[in-house]
Length: 132
Image (cartoon, rainbow, N blue to C red; front, side):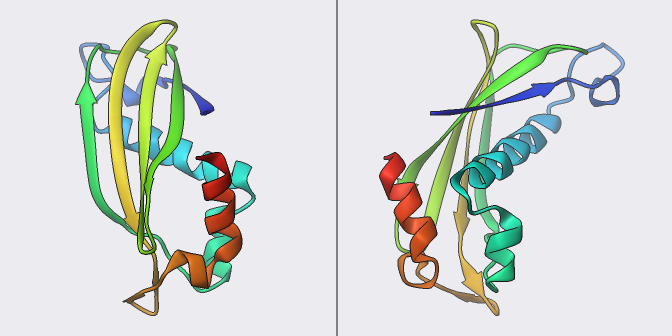
């Protein structure tokens, strides 16, 4: 399991001092980018290969609010992997307190057409499989 840390910024909070809900999707993206970097297959490397990985679905379930200066620990795992898509699952906590859980699903395309990750990026596919 991989953990990413995000310190809530002042501008991410609303007038009530609570982190605006839209920011949790951004936190998920930050954690996902970091996760792939740690695998050795950051988005810069994937895109240099001519492949992009758009979001096809996202879900976010809020459990408890966060506020300015809270450090959110985001646990990231790839919960599903197929030839054409993968799903990340995120668990966000401040200390022991659960604040949010989410999932994002991504496909792989090249020139606008779906590609099989195991064939097009076999090193990435192998790195993900080794973490299962």
